[in-house]
Amino acid sequence: MMEFVTGVAWLLAVAWTWKAVTAAFGLPRIPNLLDARFDREPAGNPAITVIVPARNEEEALPASLASLIAQDYANLRIIAVDDRSTDASGSIMDALAERHPDRLRVLHVRELPANWLGKPHAMTIAARDAIAIDHPEYLLFTDADIYFEPQAIRRSLAQAVATSADHFVTFPTPQIKTVGEGILLGYLGVMGLWATRPWKAEDPKAKRDSIGIGAFNLMRTGAYEQLGGFEALRMEILEDLMLARRVKLAGLRQRVAIAPGMVSLYWAAGAMGVVNVMTKNLFAIFRFRIALVLAACVGLALQCLAPFAFLLISQTRVPAVLTLLAIVALYALSARHSRISTRYAFLFPAGAALFLYSLLRSALTTLRAGGVMWRGTFYPLKDLRKNITPLR
Image (cartoon, rainbow, N blue to C red):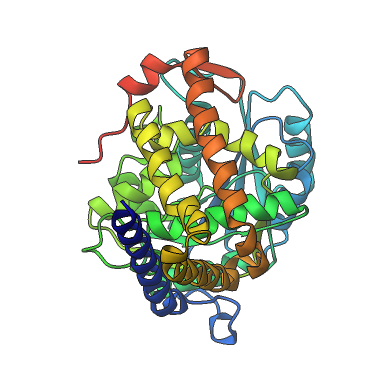
């Protein structure tokens, strides 16, 4: 039995070390748009329309839209979509549009059609409006709680044009205000490197390595139309991830960049705030299949918690230490773009426990309710399962 346990400890040590080594070589290859060489104008001065869907975002919306209006790239228009808001979001948008009519216009959604999720619907009608009126060469889909430094879109668009990107993602920087947020978001950042290798996003052969982030999905308009836009993802909770997967599977060019602090977001207040945000999404990642969730929980417990238990056993202490050193290295590498302190590596087990709780909570909450409540609308689980996006 001890030989088996020791073997498992060494397998984990090898796997984590390999992940750290590959990340050490791969992550530095991702361009940092803060470098002076990326401070340039997009070749050809292409038009871009930024699409901001919002429902009940009155607190974050003013700063987010103001940061977009203040962008230093002239050939830019913004469409804000009031998606059935019951707070002051719509009036905030209208007031800003009245002051900046050449930069911002507003669409109001009063009713949601059947067989649509609110966010894909809002982005779809905005994209149609942009294509018909602005004729942009690029569309940027973002969220209503994202803050942009003035040069963010210019630098990102210039790199997208220079690399002939069909889909371009600039990684947002999370704002950390409490230890609990740092624990969970630091854990997510490191474990995300197991889900996909961002340095492989541009490799057309690496089909599983796709990057989609709702905070910054920049699309060439022709590529967006080729894929059927968000209309093809009308019932997809993970519309950003699925869009990225469709880009890779279609053989289109995907590019990514980091720019610490240039695009930023605040997830939620405290660890439980982040857990609440993930409740809607996590079960969807596993395509609403409880067997996959349970298998993932077992695997994550083994991968993330067992090494710390192995520290207590003399025969497994060496591989456990190697595993922990690899985890610390991954935190240090991720800090280059996330700005989450490497010190959170020592709270990695707490992050794993919080994530496992979040995953189980997401599945059980959805199963108990028989569906998901999102943007004020309840979606039955049977409808979500029936409309899972086919990837091939």
